[in-house]
Length: 107
Image (cartoon, rainbow, N blue to C red):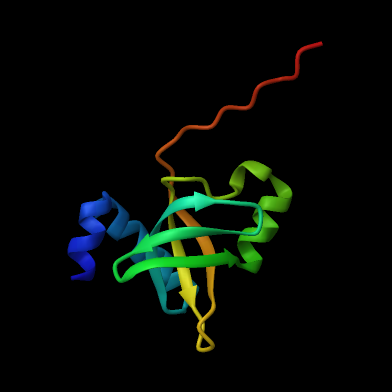
């Protein structure tokens, strides 16, 4: 059920390969999820098992502090860690469907 649900959301073989590399490097049990609503403190996602709310994990927060464009956005695929107490944290962005461009402020 989980992999069929992910494919229906747009999960591809390329996502699978990127996720496998990230999972191995993280040394943690992560799950892939598609961001459906992103906010300042966390995001709502769709995973292979259903809807899930995740706050931003430490590494992602550090990345966002260095560059605010590194915050997950709607339609980004992310890696989520599920904690034993039921919490979930967004740990990394796997891929972005939208290209972001910086615009210099007008003077």
